Length: 388
Ligand SMILES: [Zn+2]
Image 1 (cartoon, protein in one colour):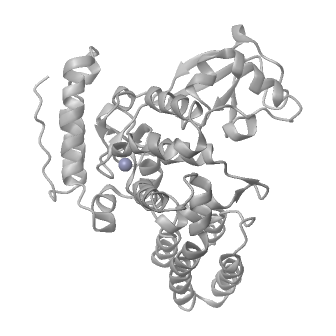
Image 2 (image 1 turned 90 degrees about the vertical axis):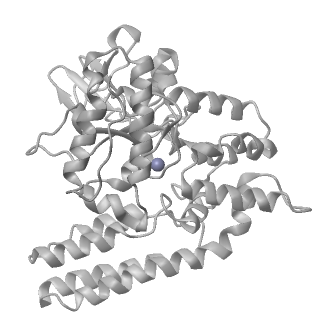
Image 3 (image 1 turned 135 degrees about the vertical axis):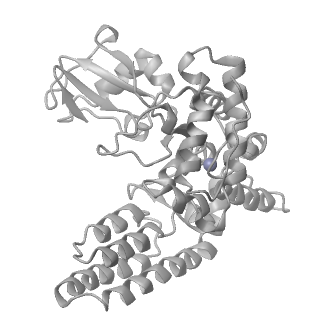
């Protein structure tokens, strides 16, 4: 969040499209937060909105706001603006995600499914979700299959939260072991560092170990905090620094590990409240909403922020890709993403041909394919199958 002239710019990471388009609920959210020093909405959870949608397409401008003096706002002083990342391909449904090969959904589809869930009893969430399995990313699909199978057994609950809680004791040690493997790598690295740096890193490792050992559901899933603390350590040697970054990045998370997912959502958020079955049901698909990523990680220096560098991706796959070099991402985790990429471009090309009447998009496939082939340094050769 930052001020931009007389506007306070608020970036919505997961406030709903619905909430923003429906200014009544948006006002309610603003009013609820009036007492806070700074108005911000990073989490729909805090605003008690009915849905949680990862939304990266819009920024909301609140005229006459300054960063520290929030006021009530009404429909006539809110204006929606498209971000540069308002990339049309991410607004279509059913295109292959170039990162994981499953289908991406758009916000409208996610809201439609959320509405369907909200009209369904807890015990039938699994049946609703089953219809949308093609959109689930690999980790969500593996958790879904596991609890669905369990729910079919005689005498088992059909409630998502109950099922996850019943698996927690089995999954927690698996997660802890995976986390400890990264800790061991860190410890080995720390021994190669000069004494001052070694002391700092080993101090952090000690704290990290204590945290990993915690087993109670109240211990929030602190992966982000753990990683942040460690990756901020100053290490002078660039190779050793990079090594530490890589270890930190490879910490198992609910984005990529079945056990981490189950431990997280069978636990509590903000140390107090359980994740509800409804929230967990949403979570199976909320990470599958498409948003826009840069093929070559965007930074101010390369200034590569145009359509030739855009690619749509599941929002969680996008977070995972982060700012990794393209070539590293391409073969990461022994996945060969060549086929996913080709499928993505073939489907994107077809969507453009049939639905997008914007000149800028006519060259999208050929430009982006060229960006990728260059970035892959000859290791892959994607085809542009569209002459638009
Ligand atoms: Zn994906």
